[in-house]
Amino acid sequence: MTDMTGKTVLITGASRGIGEAAAHIFAQAGANVVLTARGTSQINAIAQAIGDRALAVPCDVSRWEDVKAAVDAAVKRFGTVDVLINNAGIIDPIGPIIDSNPAEWGHVIDVNLKGVYYGIRAVMPIMAAQKSGSVLTISSGAAHTALEGWAHYCVSKAGVHMMTKALHKEGAGKGIRAMGLSPGTVATQMQREIKSSGINAVAQLKWSDHIPPEWPARALLWMCSDDADEFLGEEISLREEDIRDRAKVRG
Image (cartoon, rainbow, N blue to C red; front, side, top):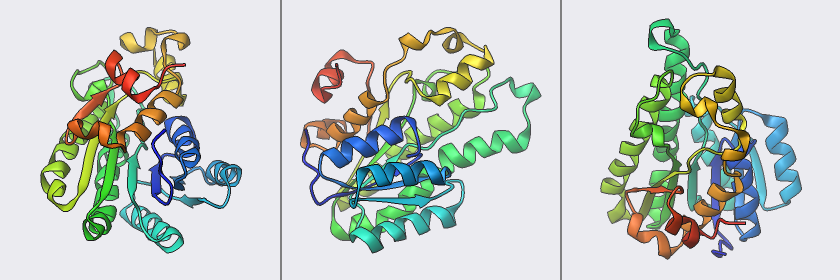
């Protein structure tokens, strides 16, 4: 396990799924963990379970003021932010473009894409000043393949993929490591929403087809190690067998 003792990790969307699993796994690796999400009671409970090295900060990533305040709270409590995990994301409402509600469609972009930018913008000066830091962003196969009913999600994830590349171009010389993680389908609430929509092939998958959220959480921890440096500025796919082996996510 990668040793994260003394490091501070800020996780968006930490109230459940991959974010919650990552909070526990990074804490087990010795990190200070800052949990952010709209679900205040959930992140408070997770932070309490982890202990003194955890801080819960209510945050709506679609609001710059919330994201900046969360980063400021992390610095005030732990002194810095060494890792940002851009995990918060939504897919509802799923449906065809022709029937879409412009405000709801735009909100997905606000959360999935602008929320990632807000996180990067808030931590980048901190990481540049200390000449080190990792920004790890949850991507998706939807960044590269259009899926019926998912136009908003596909567009947002394609933007996130390019955001990682842009951050690498601008941040590598400042000591900032930028990578994306495409985990495949994960057994989270999002998959329940996809299933209930009944739209496209992903909705037809069985629950047993999805990997547990602990797998991408462990992969994120591995991505903080030097062993993952060959993927800087790129997207790592957890569908690949050799990546699963290197990240030790099986079993």
